[in-house]
Length: 331
Ligand SMILES: [Zn+2]
Image (cartoon, rainbow, N blue to C red; front, side, top):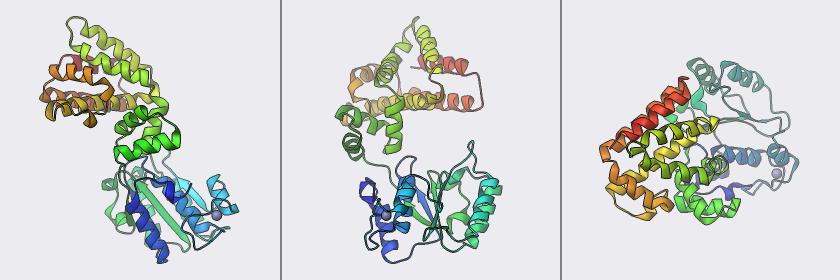
């Protein structure tokens, strides 16, 4: 997989290509953009380009030589991907990078250290990493990836060349899902809308959010408002979501996407192309009649609060029951 297979990131790829042509690869890049939009994949292709043993005038790495193959199989000694351990980029990880980058690359031309989710550094790690950037060891390229550049020390930002990655437009992502992953057109268009322009997220949704689950959860939402059966529905939905385990954040995002569609319907009207869940338009229309616009905003807040509570280890079933009872009580 070369640069040509990265979709919708023309600007980012242009910046990288230009720097490479001019032989002006910096010591550190900062790739910014939503999670799953190709930052890490691009960094790995760049690592192959910099170390490829094949045709050196071609922008695309050959993908066949020993170096490309090792990087593809994650066995190249000079290409590292560092990611947070338990939600934190630890000082021990940064110290290890400091220690190892003192030596020349073992077999490559350029050591490429990809730090994913760099915003997960605490102050101690960030300060240690800053020292590394202040006196960059030769023959090392750091590629920092983040969806939240606002959370990064300005002193780190100022030492990196920024390369912005954009969310993909829905039709672009949709056709990529069809062509590359054989997903049928309707499902691909739905996933592209749900994933908000992120291919990685679309694939995650495809794997972990079965379409029958989506439909049955969302079509039950308007019935939450029925008296007296709504509260029974609320408890059932809470129980169902409580069983999805690690995938719960996906389902909470799914609820948000439904509210977003309701808001679109109320504010813009029934434009099917603007809806994520256009296949469920009938249910959306029914629900949009029940919920006022202020109630929709309160509903989004209720989901946010539920998420915060769950992150703080609140009892999940109770928290979800509360959420659905609150949603059902709105109107
Ligand atoms: Zn190669």
